[in-house]
Length: 348
Image (cartoon, rainbow, N blue to C red):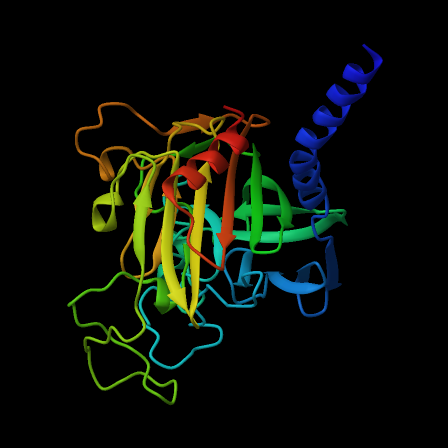
């Protein structure tokens, strides 16, 4: 009996070795570090000692942004224009910078489309998200406090933003939670312009035969619109199985954008939290390079929708929005891997 017991124990130990190895690999996640530069209005984020992204809040930007965003291998997935234009980039929508969160209808004000170059006579139509302070930068979390204001500086609501950063050998992750607290009575209306937005590098645009205005080789606007698909490799896929342009406006737990840049196969996966209003969100995934998810799209994105996605917050009331962004390099994620990551995030 004793010999049999010892043999059974050896067999059990051997059977657990692969799982133990996996746990060791998962447990060696690279550390996250922050470097604040208040004078330059930025916080640099590193994962495993490598640059990942920067929280950037310059005075000429109308919301805080994460920009640029790099893969674990160092490839930039974000468009440079308008902050650092690169040759052959498109020059549409200059308010699309990095990764951000806002909305197109908050008490009738358009936060989404605001841009510093709008003429003065139009400023009353727009709202701005002003980062007021860095509350903490510890471990893997960065916490900031912001005000959503109208053109006079009047505060409509506050936002406490928690960014949680992570990574592995070939992945980088961002979990962004916005806790909104009303100062005035605030109405978030139904609008297709929202809410979590990411403007990607041209490599992740979807091929198109539509002429658009690009920068030339010197980084200056070309003479006119052209078709230039050199290096354009993007393809959307969502949790419902829709691909390409068919992914737009669909309500999906996750949407993935695959592309290849600098010889590296890269996937960008955005997962909507099950706790968000109107989960799952409408996908505002456009072939020209805007990758967004919108929990308040409603009939503006799907005419068959019969509900009312907007909501009102009375002074002191709160509402939270959480999303996870995964950037995988060294090979695209497949649908099964995307679903597994979504289930892990949403606890299903």
